[in-house]
Amino acid sequence: MHDLDFEHEHELGITEDEAAAIKQLIEEQDTLELVTVGIDVGSSTSHLLFAKVVLRRRTTDLSSRFEVVDRQVIWASPIIHTPFRPDGLIDAHELSHFIIDAYATAGLKASDVDSGAVILTGEAIKRPNARAIDEIFASQSGKFVCATAGHELESLLAAHGSGATRLSQQRGGVGLHVDIGGGTTKLAMVEDGEVLDVAAFAVGGRLLAHDGDGNWTRIDDSAGLVAEDLGLELDPATAGDPEVRQRICVRLAQVVVDEILDEPADALTSALELTRRLERRSAPTYLTFSGGVSEYVFGNDAGDYGDIAPALAAEIVRQLGARTDIPAIDAGQRIRATVIGASQYTVQVSGKTIHLSDPGVLPVHNLPVVHLGTLESAEVDRTAVADAIRRSAEIRGADLMAPVAIGLTWRGLPAYAALEELALGIADGAGPSDEPLTLAIDGDVGQLLGRLLGVELGFARRVISVDGVALAELDFVDIGELLSPPGVVPVVIKSLLFS
Image (tube, rainbow, N blue to C red):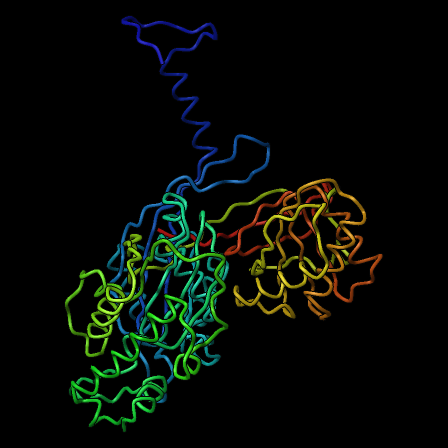
């Protein structure tokens, strides 16, 4: 920048206004603005967020890859209780009206939204429910990615959506994120912006809830297990007794705090665990919370929504205060710890660096990414690779027998022995299937690895192997048909976004 008090021209013969106009034109070509929506449908509550996302083309290479540089939530819906029919299925008609009303209230039409993400959790992922919800978005299938989140993926989403992963980058140390929802509690160990491990157990704020007439008719199986542990008979009449509910909340809070502090599991805790226990490299130095119950933990809500959430939160706070001095930090998002949508950008992958065992397998769409992290060529181990694939797929909720993309970053030389070890590990971890297997590699070994796996090792799946693609654990991938000439495939990467 410079400051001259008279009008002047540059050596190129253009005025400052003309130069500014050219700069603006370049920036407009290198910048994309998307309107995106994140829709969260769970066992207890549902809500959605609209956001504006700004993406800018990378200046470090000549690809058409765009990176997210800004995101702003522009409208958030009310949080509603997920509507269920008497037969236990989600009322898709009522849910559809809620979504239509949300669009109208936000002043947006379906055509205004460029991309989106639908997250289904808990009861919503059951096949009939998922099918009914899919029908709501069927006409916009090209715009949306849909993640059916099992317990471990839900834990991962909560850690990102709450801001806990971002906080861990800023704060340092090891954090334990605790998401307490209506029916389950999810744990995630976070460090330096990465989720190290996740776990879940069946404790939540709506295990007991009353209906519109004030009768405590919702009694989840988990609440029954707690009552059995306490020697109580639990039915709508006894659940209506405040003393009974308090005893149940005390016992539920004990389970939560035992899990947080990694105490040995008693019989009830073991019965309530939904996944294997959390692996801990070291003890957490701080706690973060999200989910509906966290609103009471931090004192942000004092309302009564006809369940045990306030009493459960109060008891968790009391027991944590009595048993540990680990500080609790508000990471920024509590009950709205969810996606705000999905960004997307396209990269062109050179035909010289890809391997297609059958070009007819393309195109493929919305492949969930099973990410292995960074692999050093000098340290690749077949068994470790296979185990990493299975564990990442388990957390991601991805079916390795279905179309799926395995993502990794390769560091080091493309030594044959190391690539063979990697290929063998991929074959062991992914296993045989009639569905194709896609490899997406950040590193120049796509063709070599694909040929090793698909030709030399005779892997019993069709293989798509591309490189020059950087993926993350919550991405989805589209790969278009081979363009010949110039011999490239278009790759669309759709990344879940968080506030």
